[in-house]
Length: 201
Image (cartoon, rainbow, N blue to C red):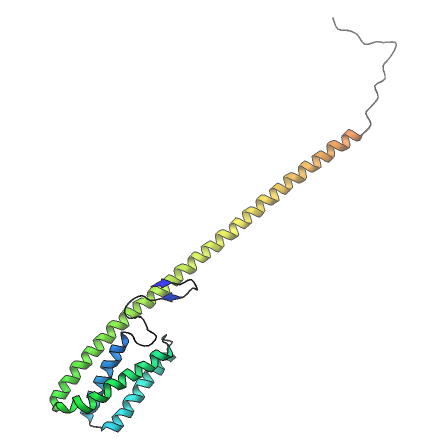
């Protein structure tokens, strides 16, 4: 997983969502096969079974959209299509080749593989979501630290600036004070003519 320049997290594992097809398409393919085998055991007939399968696949995609699982509209449509593409030939041509108990055994075997593969993909996707959440938290923490350091730097700069201003103001006051003193009239020294100053030996 990596972060793009526009701030989006992009998964790089093999279970990442594709635009049209991805590894989850294998899970949907097996779902179509297991659904066809299961409905063949129940002997609903092809029209009713096809309608049930289509509604089930569509309802699952709507559920994924409701729980905010990110997928492109093309991928959602392909998931339903892949499920139906595997469902139809399995129901019409594969299921009639097996007796009841043989059909039940094949259904159970395909279902186990389907569930195991789906769980494996879900586990990796769940870890990817946890990693994304951890990365988002770390980025938010780093951002808060950066903002705190920036504010502290600005405050220190303003404090140094105000100190320089005070020193400059004091220097200006001292200069004006010296200038005013220089403009004051100097006291006149009157010498006493009768008592000249004594010269030291």
